[in-house]
Length: 414
Image (cartoon, rainbow, N blue to C red; front, side):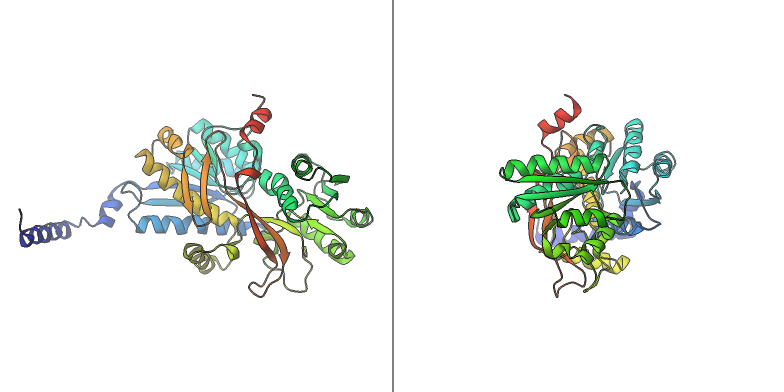
């Protein structure tokens, strides 16, 4: 048996040799080629807060992983580009990242148009592309390719099926009137809402469907119809962003939120209402969905992430920031599992990925490469805890709010 003193002596010699030739873990990692992530997002313009916070979320994850020794002894490197919410610009940046920067992975995007363009290129370039915001179900359903993965919700749990489940769990309203933008996403959202809700509450009915041209901001005539319809609740079908802000101000002036229940998908996201103060118009008492209610999620890791992101950007953390953080850890998990950055092997590892994250367990569905990211819902109110309106009485939805595999097979005509 080797004596303890001799073992300690050997260890001391090894440490001295390592120090002498500079082989610290950091130095060894620096000598290997980094694993590059090309992160394409909207970094300028009126919705740049999505890109800024998303890039910050990815950066936090990269820094944590590198500080812990990297991935397979290699550090991660994040290269951020601006897509300007333009498919041509996004595609151009994707090509440059792959051909010039030699990135191992592509990630990011808020625009579904940009996402569709990059997804098609990822297929041609045989490069893994991971979405952190873009919501169009078509990217992973009708237009599916094996190189594209989504680590965020899609439109189904957020605009259609999810709000229907939330309403059935919360109010069980019997007479509902809908208002939506007259385009594909609005029509699909209402169809999914109706199909789901009427199965869960069979004695309910949609008493009227109101439609406005895409981009409309004057809803006054439709608000009057809603108020006089005799409905218990109204549902907004894919009206969001500037349209939702305009609708809310007009509905607030009309007193609509005091007359009936409101179902406003996406009203719970901080990006829309983070600058609204007490006394300003907001969707008061509306049932809303939310993709990252950081104020309602317990745990030190979530609190640390929120603090870091606030310090880094001065902004409230978006759901895109959380999704980007998860994407970087998904890359770490899949590459570690595959034992390589080889694209085909990483795809197989990522298809069966199960992760414990600070928002709960996340599982990748192999059939459509859609991660079962949670969606939360609740009632919009002000509380003393935050300076902006946010969802309270928070509930959580999971895989049940997404299309099933059988539903996707029908959509694909299989």
